[in-house]
Length: 269
Image (cartoon, rainbow, N blue to C red; front, side):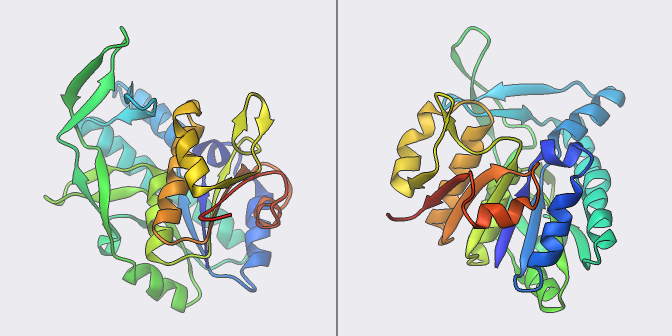
């Protein structure tokens, strides 16, 4: 079984037909679960609604959206509505029995609401702020996904988690994919993005072990660092292999499975 994370940049770019054609071919022999992003669409709609968007940076250099009450409502609406159903529709056009679900459905993703966030402010200093409606995944209930896969449906998951007080929480899509892949004991987790993979000094890093990837994390820039972190989490949860690569080319998933021009991270050498 494969978990595929479709990045927001791929989703917003006319929903590349080749991705879905590729999935249709792979589904003859594989079970696939899709997790998607869509941050650009959330930002666009939130601004139209008059909801100010703020982005923060952690001491580890990870950039993320600050999610207040108004933002989590916009986030839930766009992710589980517009973006999710756009992907489902494109899959259905390829003859794929897709079902769109959110992480709250069936209690799929449960998370602990972050009480405080430690960030780096504009002056480069550490400071603590209210955690808002951001969550850290602590439980995955995969029974709904299992039921859908057993009936040959393809689950398409939006990364909205349910908090301890049953509030909606924004959780990172890459890390949601990692946790779902780990719970499902997936053979592979694939992160589709708009670049070839992890680039260091302009050169593609093709192969890494889990330990090497963890040591490299502090050196990785905005954007890619969350994907590599998610890769390490997936491997630690028991996934066999994590792959990061370009989703904009022809038959991207098949090429990544063949380790064609991408970054592959494995637990051991």
